[in-house]
Length: 275
Image (cartoon, rainbow, N blue to C red):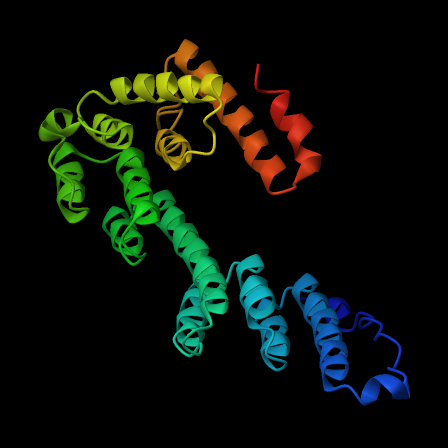
């Protein structure tokens, strides 16, 4: 960081609270948090996310503040360490705070896993994925690691074992039952193309039937999106027709999800790709 940035003009502090507000502790506390967030934002913009996080921790602004600032600054290891420490100290019964902290921590773990994938640290990537609570997020993250693998078949078989998946040759026979299991094991089998086809077929059926409130829709979408579109050689991994269908479905369902979350500004752009 250069000296000019360090000597930049600090943020303007909000006007002092009037005397009537001082009688209410919550109002004073709110003004304190507001000032701390201004200071934190200034430090974050000047490349010091750790200092920014400390400013927010000082006023107990943990969930929305301190952890989010560390995440924005890509201090992923600190997010996991601090988040798990603070999450363990949340009073019993305060489920909302614990869930919000865990959500930020899980996001950081996913980013760390993607970093390990990019560096071809496959064993580390699986270990990181397994630190997530057992369930959908852990399963999908492990699938992403395996489908991104570019090493030898022996290394790939070891990853399957570490991730507690059956060997690729056995996955095809396990692709029965619910559509989630069908897609999961087809993608992990020696014929992943059938998993892509089954996913596209299922998603198109659910869109036509207006069944987008089903959790299976979003689970299958996340699974099929774990398939890399391009090989490390630069060639397309998914054939042209299915690639177009997959991109269109992803754009359409992404627009639906964005509308549900009230991210209205990006909805038209996503829909423009859903043709």
